[in-house]
Image (cartoon, rainbow, N blue to C red; front, side, top):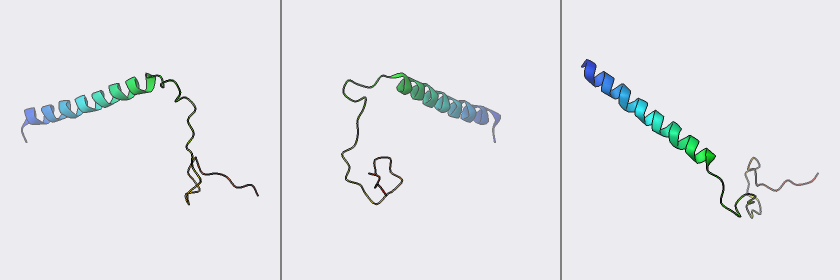
Amino acid sequence: MDFTRLILAILFFGALVGIYIFLFLKNRRTPKPEGCENLKADCDGCKDIYCPNHPKQES
């Protein structure tokens, strides 16, 4: 394997990771649009008891 190809591959994947981290941080700092701060799903409940929107039944 050629040494320059190895270096180029490392730089390419490093650039991809850098772009991912940059976009992740920019997305995290973006404020939510007005009216979307406290959204709740109108969910009647599915069979997935671990879903955060699943209505809990009182015992």
